[in-house]
Length: 113
Length: 113
Image 1 (spheres, helix red, strand yellow):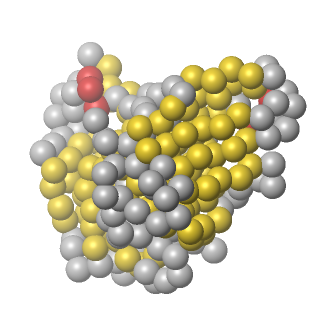
Image 2: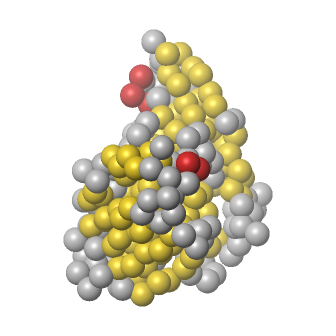
Image 3: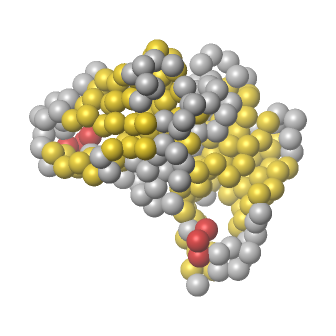
């Protein structure tokens, strides 16, 4: 069964600090992995996409990594801002079947001033 | 703005009732997905349509049904509503299966009293 596990479940940091969110998956065969940001009460918005051949991808202060061998990904947030407070969701899509993405439950990040 | 429009934004109804949620995908997107997000829960995949045809089914209850019309808008029908159906219902669209990123609407908040 395809699964995506994220850790930690929640995280509180001070503004300006860095943090790293983790994602482990068992989706196979692998097509791509996306990180989404979901503000409270809003729909998720894609931050990055990682394909099998990509190890690192950056989007401003967000840097995603992918280790396809260990089936792990991380999202590193640098110099956090109050607006980074949100849920970060790891989504993995399989290249087999109907390409339905599998969602993790998300990491809730709170950035305090 | 994701380009995906969902109506209504809020819906309050009573147990046993039936409601219809509406979604207009981004211009040109053929795929429409429906997701349910209960309080403090992850996004649960319900159903996907591609160009009017049902493509994949997730954890959708038999009391729920959906369809995609020739103009590509989609409706999610929820009947015999129960208290546990209270949740945020998101619609998302994409341009080619799930290898393209999902664009989410702002959701419909359903409250069953």
